[in-house]
Each structure stands twice: as C-alpha cells, then as structure tokens.
Image (cartoon, rainbow, N blue to C red; front, side, top):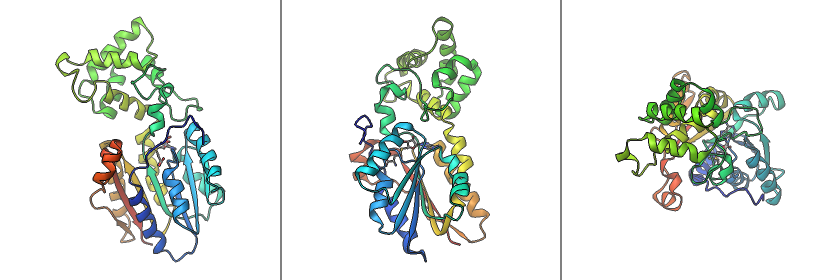
Length: 311
Ligand SMILES: C[S@@+](CC[C@H](N)C(=O)[O-])C[C@H]1O[C@@H](n2cnc3c(N)ncnc32)[C@H](O)[C@@H]1O
C-alpha cells in the first residue's frame, strides 16, 4: 500500500454490510453488484468484496492519492477480479455506467461523504490548520479548479462572508470575511496558518479559546465550497437511486447537518414520487455504536440513511 496514504477508520461498516446483505439476500440474482462512490482508504469497498462470494464491486474516488493507494491495496489483497476502482467524481458515475455498462444495476450503493483522515493528516493538502501548508483543499488536486486560497484572494467580501455562513454556519462570517479582505490588501492569502490566525483574531476575544477553534467552521465552509460537495450530492442522489436493482439499497453516511438535510429531503422526494415502490429503511438516521465512537471519535457526528428500491 502507498506508505504515504494515512489509514482511515471505516465508519459504520457493520451497519453498511448488514444493509447490503439485506439487499443481496432479497435479490433474485445469484451475482451481486455493489458500488462505493467514496473509496477513500477502501475500507468499505474491500469489506464488500470480501463479505460476499459472488460480488463485483465498482468503486470511485476523485482524489488521486486515494485512487493510487486504492489500486495498490486492491492488488495487495488480490481483489482485482472482484473490485474495480475508477478515478472520477461520483457525479459522473451515472453517465459512466450509462455509456460503459448500460445494463448494470446495483444491489447496494454507498456514499461515505466528505474527506478522509488522509486529507487532514497530509498537511500539504491544506485541509487542516494543525501545521502550516498551502491553502489548497481540492480533493481532485489534479483538476484545474480554484483552491481555497484562490477563493479568498479573488472573491469579494460579501461573497466570502456568504460562503463561510452558508457552508460553515459560522455566526462571525462577516467579521472573518472583513478580516480576510483587510489582510489580503497587505499580503496574499496563501497558507493554512495565515487563515487560522485571521479567524482567531476576528473572533470576539472572550470566545477565542472555546472548545471549537475559531477557524474550524471557516475551514469546513471553504472545503465544501471548493469541492462543490453539497451541489454534487443534491444533483446526484436521485440518479444513483436510478441505478439500483430491485430491492437495492442506497446508503448515505453524512457528517454534518447540511449533508444530512439534503439526503433526508432527497429521500423524501424519491419516496413521494414512487407510488409504493420505495421504502425508507431508516425513518430516523442510524448512529454509530458507543463502542465505535469510543474507538474513532470522528464517527460521533456520523448519520446513516438508507433508501430501498422495491421494484
Ligand atoms: C470519508 S472518505 C471515505 C472513506 C472510505 N469509506 C473508507 O472506508 O476508507 C470520503 C472519500 O470520498 C472522496 N470523495 C468525496 N467526494 C467525492 C466525489 N464527489 N466524488 C468522488 N470522490 C469523492 C474523498 O476523496 C475521500 O477519499
């Protein structure tokens, strides 16, 4: 495995395996097809490939590091026959299936949203302010898209404030945007520590040392904006649902309320248009067990929602 890819704890893995098993067991087919839209470190994909005997898993990830590491892991685990990995944004997956394998239908499709531990631990990717690094934050860093630094240097104050408010739910978004624009008149915004420092000093002094660091929500907002995470989710969920086989399940693990809200509403829309051919299997979201949260604190904010296509 690529030694530089940091390992990732796969959130709610037993629960995902259970829902996938439910779909496979109630299928009239003997060969199962599963898809993982967010391969990351490959924990879910590899478990799918190992758990089911007659399965073919199709996985994607837009991150070049996850892709490269994934190819090596698949080879190392001798899973080449069962597990295929393609580098792409999952928004492209429905069209890819349509053009490459038009008859392909899935018993289970998983989205384990957001970033992986690798993104936070590889400081040079610019997702974390634990160390100083270029303010990048692109998952698909091989694509010609704007970095977080580009956004902060080029957008106007109001646009920056709106991004921080909308995607970070940061109540001091206007103060932070003002401080960013003041700073960039002196020095170009270019590093994670520079942004951390701006956020810290833009916060009221009595709130600078609370549990949540003053830069946390701004970093989340920029990451979501740079990678268009919410638009991609909103525009792709229904198309992915359309790729399910009879009894197939679409599983979505989200990590913040913005993602969960979109998932919940999309599932409701699909259900309402379905004329009894759809079942929402999670009336309330499924949360990780206490044991999982104790083992992996990042999972504490995870929620799993699952919808099933009955016909
Ligand atoms: C939370 S991690 C997935 C971890 C994985 N389930 C595991 O067990 O290792 C999310 C992964 O999805 C990828 N990703 C996020 N949004 C994506 C998108 N729109 N298209 C493709 N990959 C995406 C990220 O690059 C990251 O590697």
